[in-house]
Structures are given as structure tokens and as C-alpha cells.
Image (cartoon, rainbow, N blue to C red; front, side):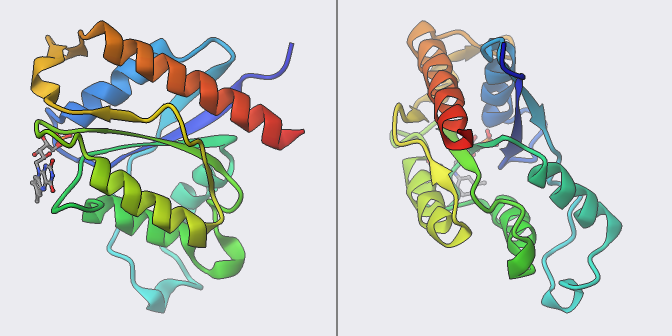
Length: 184
Ligand SMILES: Cc1cc2nc3c(=O)[nH]c(=O)nc-3n(C[C@H](O)[C@H](O)[C@H](O)COP(=O)(O)O)c2cc1C
């Protein structure tokens, strides 16, 4: 039996009642038994400042250490103004510096996004994929988890839509398979 994979999740919304938080909670509950998801808080990170690249605040160092220890990364995020929420981009920017200590280097990654709109946050996903090139991350291509009209798929703090739940499990399974492949 192989070791359980450690998936570190980054949540792109700080909102208490965030739809994406509910999606991440559901993913954590539905995660296949050979992996587990640990969500790392990005809301406490200061704004990135290159002056501190080589003397990072302790909370940033702890955050980067946790990310670097992950076997895989899961990003669950809304789309803000057709792009990545600033809070998430800020976390990614800290991870990426200094260039010799990119905590995301070589990591397998999957993205889930949810929005009350028609596009389900897909444009943020494509911008994230662009970042993955420079970060040297390895995203899974499919299945995509793009949850549109999310308010109709959630009740009592849970995703209640079976096709959406199935897609979440399918994607986590693909991420686990991809991660094990890259580890060999
Ligand atoms: C600053 C801002 C920009 C937004 N831009 C978009 C957008 O480009 N596309 C979209 O589908 N929804 C957009 N929305 C709506 C969000 O999808 C919606 O607020 C969603 O509930 C945020 O995710 P959360 O519930 O996880 O916090 C925006 C919301 C905010 C606050």
C-alpha cells in the first residue's frame, strides 16, 4: 500500500460564506482514501514586497514550508474581474520567490472554480494555467471542475448536486493518479 498523498489546498476567497469554501469542504470530505486534503490559510499573508524576499516574515516562511511539503496542490477559487483574486495571486507570488526557492516548483496541481455566473470562474482557471508555466507546475488537463450557477448546486453548506460531486471525485482521482505517475 502506497503512502497517503498530502494535497495542500489554497482557497481563493476569504469570505466566510464563500461558495468556493463549500466546494473545498466537499472536496475534502469526498477525497479518495489514498490521499488527504489540508487547507492552508492564505488570508494572513502580508502583501508581497520584494524588499523582504530574502528575509521573509515568519508567517510567510511557515506558509512556504507547508506548500513545499505537499505532494500535490489543489486550488479552489472564484474569478474576480475575469481573472485570479488578488489574495490568491499574492500567495502564489510569495511561493514563487526567491526563484531558487519556488515552493510550487514541479508540483502537480488541479483547479476547481465556482461562480453564480454562467462561466463558473473558467477565466480565472485559464489565467492560473498561464502562471503554472512560469511556476513550472504540472496541471491535470481533465476533468475540469467549473461550477456555474453554483447557488443552485449548494444547500445547507454542502454541494448537493450529484453530477458536480461526481466531477469533484473524478478530478481528485485524476490528480492522485497524475501525482503518483510524476513521483515514479
Ligand atoms: C471583485 C469581484 C469581482 C468579480 N468578478 C467576477 C467575474 O469576473 N466573473 C464571475 O463569474 N464572477 C465574478 N464575481 C462574482 C463572484 O463570482 C461571486 O461574488 C462569488 O460568490 C465569489 O466567490 P465566493 O462565493 O467563493 O466568495 C466577482 C466578485 C467580486 C467581489
